Length: 534
Image (tube, rainbow, N blue to C red):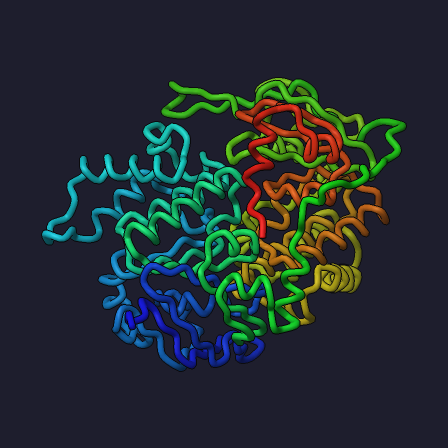
């Protein structure tokens, strides 16, 4: 029998925190073989990422590791940082969950790929020269589907959308054709069409190079389309392991059945939700244009091209489209975080596009923002409780006791346990950080909520709970919502209207029933056809 490319045996991981030791992983054992994709699934905080990060030596210094991790026949459990340098990239590589924090903001994405390529000698022992490395980097960017790769080679991370940054991360991870690739939520920030392309790419790497892939994901559609075997984790332990078809057809554990039941689906038919649209809209966007320059101002492109729409009290507009279509840029304009080139953005009749920061300040409590990347939107120097309380402190919500009570109320609403308010963002999983972001956005009961991929980092069961929470809060408080997402099933569930963007322009807009079940445009049809299904 072929030896395992990676094997975890009796792995336990304990973290030392200010409030005491936290056992994140308990006696975990599983293996992945060359040419195989092993999916590790489970709720946020179940120990998925911690388990596999131990296989690449990326656990923090506060972690104590027991058990064994064997990579390509070598026990790497106690390797020094120096010893790891020769293994990362060649023997094992990783696609990180949050590319915004994994990419260096001071260097272009092309430089970072070239750096990875030149860090490892080739088969002849020589390092790739700069010219060859640049050509290979552009080839990799083409492979992962980044538009205009020659031009974007010189872009900095902040000039790319979340999905585009994720594609750069994948290019770096596959650059040296590692024997084991850890893919930690590799398609979280990607729209469905690019997600399908990335899944094809990972399949090709598995088949062509015979590499082993450990896939960490909360998307059961992705698991069904890519994995050979599945490991299910809950509260730091492995609760079930089976071939993918067996797991989906006949799961044995109640926890696995609960995960599968919570998967959002685009129903064949549904009735549209109605909202009273009398009176002034909460948000009105008219003829919005946003143009960016790059290359020292010599080049320019339109991120948003003449977009108009409105949202009324208690209404949700779902904004969908491929990565780089302009979704997040529109969201930033709506929240007055980006000035438009032309056009207007009005909140409750007040045009906000050109207001000074002084005049904007009292208005900011009227809208909340859930960012796509919680790792970079939460202040690492503050506890999560302080992050949630910050808007209340800025806008003088009440006494210290009232702020503390409201903070705990929101933590409970987003299903985080007591004591979470004392922990720092880096001590939480990606999904837990996203729930903190949602709590912070809702803490002042805003008139308008801008939700940029608010459930992208959440596992399916917590996603279902958060969507229930979102709908309940909207019914109670009547806030309007601009809901930006690549998950069409989620958009279908929460939206009253759906707008489809392509290359910065509005392709079509209408009710969820019309747009998601009987679209007129070929582009929308292509988005729907690319949805991964179980």
